[in-house]
Structures are given as C-alpha cells and as structure tokens.
Length: 208
Picture 1 (cartoon, rainbow, N blue to C red):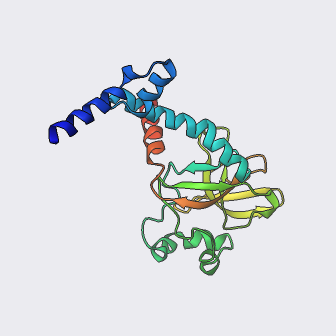
Picture 2 (tube, rainbow, N blue to C red):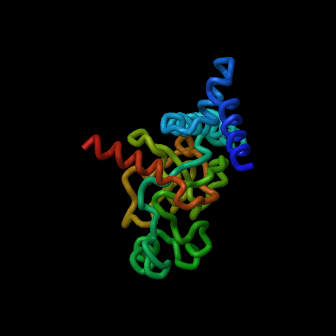
Picture 3 (cartoon, rainbow, N blue to C red):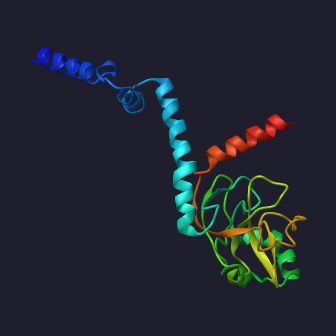
C-alpha cells in the first residue's frame, strides 16, 4: 500500500511538473506558482512588490483620496522613547511657549507618538479641516520621502508642524502649504515598514 501511494505521489508530481505544461503561459505559471527554487522565490517577491506598487497602492489611493495612501515612518522624530509623562517633562517648555497644554495634548490622536518602522494608512483631507494635533503627511522638495509630523499651529493658509521627539521645529516646518499636504495619518500598523527603513538606511550608507 505504501509503495503504491508513493508511486502515485511521484506520478502526480511528474504530471504537474514543468515539462507537463505544453504552453509558454503554463510553464510561466508553474515557475511562479509551483516551482520550489530560490529563483522562483525571488521572482515571486519581485512580482508581489510590483503588484503592490503599481496596482494595490494606486487603487487604495483612489479610495482614500491621496497619492500617498500608505507611508512608512523612516525616522525616530515621533518616538517618545518611554512614557508620556517622561516625554512631556522633556518637551513641556516648548509646547507651553506655543500655547499647547498637557491637557490638550492628551486629546490629540496618537498622543504617545509612534516608532520608526511603523506604517500609516493615510486619508486625503481638505486643508481647512486640519486641526492642531493632527498627524499630517506632506512633502518637501529636498526629501524623497514624505514628512509625518504633528500639526502645532494653523495660521490662515499655512500649517506649522513639529516632530514629537524633536526639541524644536525644523526649518521647513514653519510654513507647510496646501500644495504640500498629502493627507492625515489615520491608522497605524506597527513594524510593517521595516523593509522600507532598511532600504532607506542602506541608500544613506551608500551615499556616505
């Protein structure tokens, strides 16, 4: 019985092997879907990345109303590195000078910050609907990756942001315009972006 069963398994494998497919399309399908090799694994990974970038993300962006529907956090500028109270003790003076109290901050979305390597689902939003405390995604000409920081001020058609972990605003954060805005960071997925982070860190190391 065992020999018969073993023979049947071998025969089934042969019948569904690469050479069993008569067309090029069938052979390609077998390579991606059934072949157990390192080359097939690499090809599958590349295919998944390409489908994600050129099919899934554009469709998601269309649904969410933004060209950046998913954004990976590639720096630690929003990491509180511990408890909220400990972080607030270090940052309190800056926020007090800019008319943001502890009680207000506790009501902000993602009040405990977030980590390098996290991914956010981003939703498009009207410029006039942005409020102090929102986490927004926007771009600047000098960086290829978008900025994901908190709004700390709104003055007419200008937004001001700051990274929670930074001691002060960076030079580009005092005048964010509507044209730069890509959306509001809504839903956080921890650690999903570490592949992107690794690529960014690798690119930075090569440039040095």
